[in-house]
Every structure is written in C-alpha cells, then in structure tokens.
Length: 300
Image (cartoon, rainbow, N blue to C red):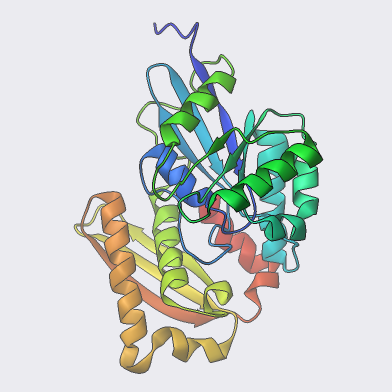
C-alpha cells in the first residue's frame, strides 16, 4: 500500500482578466496543450482541470473563463463557473496579471474582490517578454499600495520562463493530502470535449470580428473505435449572415478550418483523425437555455 504521509495534492484555480494568458499558463504547467489558446479574449468558455502528477505531489489546475460583466445566458454560465472555481473549488488561487495599469483600473471590481478571498493566493505577473520594467514596476507598486500584497513571481507563460519556479511556490502552499486522480489522468474531460475545443480554438484563430463569438461547436459523432478516429461536428452560428463567411468562397474557408482543426486533434490524440464539419444556424443561441443545456453536456 502506498504511503501518502508527506504527499501533497490540491486544486489551484488560475484566475484573471480575459486574454491574460491563463490557458497558456495551464498548458505550460501541465506540459501539454490541454486548453484552447488564441490571441482573442474569451476563448475559454468552460472550466477545465489539468492534472500534473509526480511521486511527491499532484497539482490540479482549474482553467477558468476570464472575468467579464455577463450579459448573455452563456456569459452568465461562464461567470458563475469562474466564481465557483475561486470560491468553492480551490485550495490555492493564482491571480494572473498583465502589467497594464489601465486594464487593471478598468476592471478594479475584479481585483478588489479577488484580494478579499480567504484562500491562499499567489500573485503572478505574466507577459514579461512583452512589457518593460516600467509598467511592471507600476503594477507592483499599485498592488502593494492598494492590497498590501506583493507580486510573488514574474513569468512569461508563452516563453515558459520561470514556470519551474512557480511550481516550487505552489508546492509550498499545497495541503498534505493523497492524490485525487490516478497517475495517468491528465484532465477531468473526455476526448470529445478536447475535439470540440480544438475546433473552437481554430475558429478563434482563423476568423475575425463577431464570428468566433457567434459560434458554438457540438460533437455529434465521435467514433474512437475506427481508424482513423471519425469525428462529426456541428458548428452553430447565431446569425444567418455569418454562414457564408465561415464557409467562404467555394468552401475554402471551412476547408482551412477543417484541416487545421483535424491536425490539432490528431496531435492531441496521437492518432489519425477524419473530421467532418457541418454549419447550422441557431439564432441567438447564447440566450437559449435549452440549446446551452444540450451543448454543455460534453463540458461537464
């Protein structure tokens, strides 16, 4: 029987504003591309757990949607998941911050609330590969003055700089506990979830303006017992006018989407994949509770 007397395990929520690099950080910490990444905000719509297990500790990272002022039914779901991950699920909260004082002041309500929680927090400045010393220093001084909390670490999640140092800080704060998951488990999600996320990630990367935000992906068929793995996915759009844009002239745009998404799914699964995409209209799906309930069955 394994002795877990000195073993450490716990849940670490990664919290921050949209597009601050939360998904990039969870991928860097876990050493694999679990979470969808895009330069556009709100790529992450549902929380996901990434699991890093060693002989001494298990870290369960919770990637959450960025803090927003919710308007649609979908955004309210995203907001509720982000709050739950911080207030109920986490043993530790990483507050990930971009060193932009204007963005912080614009969303000061978020920072005022996050620094009031009673859970141990680790304050991390990200994107040090982009920002210079002056804005970083301004943000550090601001946090110290307003919240009496210093910055624990400066990192670049994209360049994987200081990631190992961050792990050491987390280990020191992890509670003594046996592991929650078996060694080989990398996430709490099924592969069909990641297939939908890889398609959604490529929609964010290949299309502009409203298109990514009006799109939703549903996996209708996932035949893992076939070689190649067969996946049939529906892309739902909230406006009819978006359909010719996502398909493109002579189907070229959706052809590029299918190829890039298929490649990403293949890399993730380590197997050959055949992906088929169908485009459907579901007007105003973001506010349709029946549609959202059906859509999120793959995300729970």
